[in-house]
Length: 246
Ligand SMILES: C[S@@+](CC[C@H](N)C(=O)[O-])C[C@H]1O[C@@H](n2cnc3c(N)ncnc32)[C@H](O)[C@@H]1O
Picture 1 (spheres, rainbow, N blue to C red):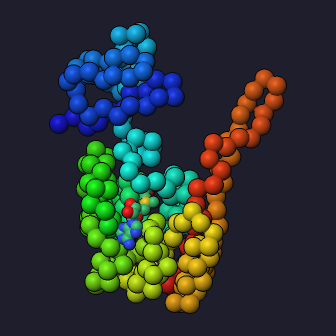
Picture 2 (picture 1 turned 90 degrees about the horizontal axis):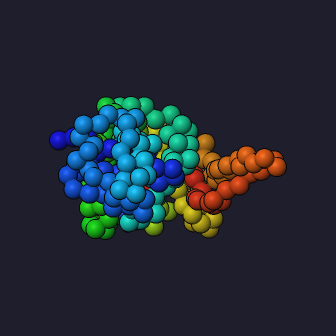
Picture 3 (picture 1 turned 120 degrees about the vertical axis):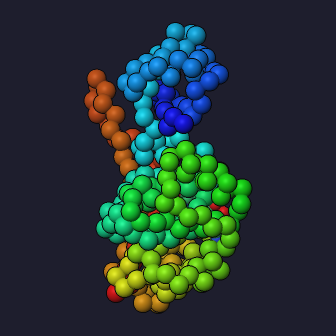
């Protein structure tokens, strides 16, 4: 079976994993069997004469092209968590909840020799994430459907990183502390300040150290003839709390 490819035309990206039939886009219809003889970097043309460049489906596309049910964490925030926690490629990571699986996929991608355990309470979301992981060719993700607090209470293994993007994250903090190895990290992502403060305080209470809370703002630059100015499509995404079991 061929790996999926990405068709790009201007600012539009399309994920293709079938090489028969047609792809209908607002820039015209592309015949998918034409892709079989092509290589990355080649182009195909729609019936309206619009060119689409053929690119490999890579980690750079996870956020953009994964099917989404729940709101995913953005790459800027995932990148920060990976760097801040010094993620190594042979780690054991717990990700709760899975949502669309974007965060779990990036963790799995950068954790090639390790494992990501991801827990989601809604089976229909877990199903969408499962399909996303399959498309991305990620085999080191173990999915569990259930309430993350209950599921994690039963874990006997020691995790290097626990990441929470779920409703009852405050309740999960002491459980995370128990299942982390010494010097392991807990990172919590939440869009609301009140919940973030509650997580921060609970983390100090249960014994986490080096606890920090922050938000990352991504500001783009727009270069025009008249001058350059900053702009941002999305100002606020979420707050991150990171702490360490030391
Ligand atoms: C915002 S989404 C997570 C998005 C995900 N981090 C991503 O990047 O694609 C939050 C998810 O947590 C799930 N969830 C909420 N509380 C949960 C719990 N106690 N146990 C497991 N999953 C939970 C929700 O059903 C939802 O799918």
